[in-house]
Amino acid sequence: MAFKQATCPQVVGISTSQPLQRFDLPLLRSLSRQYPVAQWQFCQDPDQSIDLNSAIASLHDYLQTCQDKVHLVGHGIAGLVGWLYTRQYPERVRSLTLLSVGVNLATSWHSHYYEQRQLMCCSRETILTRSAFYLFGYRDKEILYWLANLLKEDLDNSLVPHSIYAPTYILPKSLSVPMLICGAVDDYVIGEQVYKKWKSYFKDSDRLWLSQHGKHFFHYSQSQSVSKQIHNFWQSLSLVANAIFV
Image 1 (tube, rainbow, N blue to C red):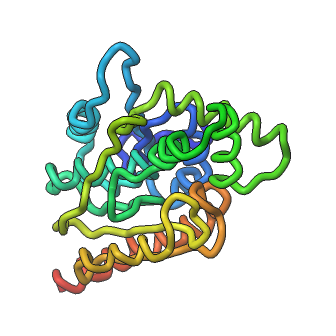
Image 2: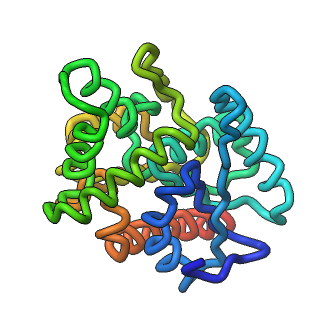
């Protein structure tokens, strides 16, 4: 691991993809300098059907072992799991930070991949390589080939609530828990205007922050900036809580 896992975490990073969880680590490592952090991972059984409820139940089993409420952080489908969990168990969550999650909570690079499969008459490998370019922005062929293989593994083995025949749509509702939405202006999957639609669901405590660069996995390349925004958000919640109790 790239950081020491906390046994009593204040922050829990959600992962639903073993191949892509490496892109979460720089952010979690940065946060771990100031907070006890743990990474929780859901491993999809290849012999079982995709079931978001199983992931929620598994996450609940884990969070019940934590002494206090935690800050949940999730990217993409992991963010969707965090949102569904928070809606069901708000008493276990101090705040929810969603990274690269649109107002259709199920939108992910996977749903865009399946859209491209329907629109383009080319091989799976070609579309995955194109997706790697648009998701990360690298131009080096060897890096793109490596990333395309990671995307393929994620597509085949992770919690993906989409197929070429059945896209999934999940619209948000207002949550009682404070929420931070983070994304990138140049995100290929979720556009800037889509991110801004979150504001219609916001409470006074909620925030939206957009990086100017970084694309869909902006939290990897811009981990320090994202960490700073998350830290400031949590600090603002602490200040409000202290003001209430004074």
